[in-house]
Image 1: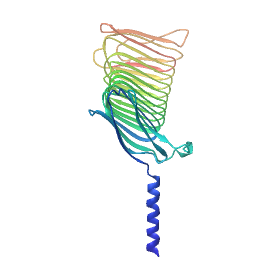
Image 2: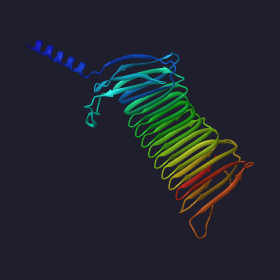
Image 3: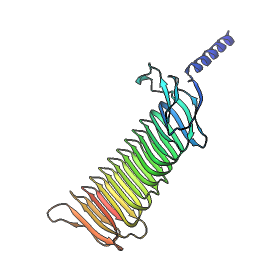
Length: 315
């Protein structure tokens, strides 16, 4: 009897597994006259990979709550969407999800939208617009126009080139070896970037920003109550603008710096100069302070302000 009972339990478990497993997908479409690939997946994991073939393929396993997959060509666009069951609701978020790999010509534009979907994108050289809510974004070897956005997921990027924008609300951003023009935004997340970009704009509210930069033409950083740090080499006639309310700013200048410095603080903020012997001058009647000095030929420009935080420049 025990043997039969074990067999029945095993059969029931096997049936349960197949009921929970999603539909297997293996489809392809020619990419003739196609310019865009648009992908939507509510939850799970999606890998998007550029290649030199002349068609778009999708393979993997659908969410067990999915009704099927839409995979069609409309004009110059190929559209891929995991269609969820009408009975799927917010109570069904835990577990499950699709697990798909999309391969597409690397010269096409790609757009992805998800909710709790992790997404990996590699080897696209035209345009990549990737948005998710609570999923993580992991990208490498992208070029052109690049927009990566998550609400409370993390962003990991490597070897990006072009016009780049990375943004989160409470997630963290880790960027390595980006080049071109870089914009980074976070509210309460942590930002770390080791970038080759010539033009950088970074801001946070209460989060932290830590930048290691090469030679730059323009740097614009701001924070409300967070901490901002940057190591940089300022090019000839380069421009740096930084500001904070109660947050701290730390600028570490590498190599020879030729710039005109104009720094100010209000409401008890501190100005610290480790570049020259010049010190801040505080008002006799107010708690404000100013620090003005020149290094080298002064062709570059460094402008910084804080209300009650600390602004430090050093080498």
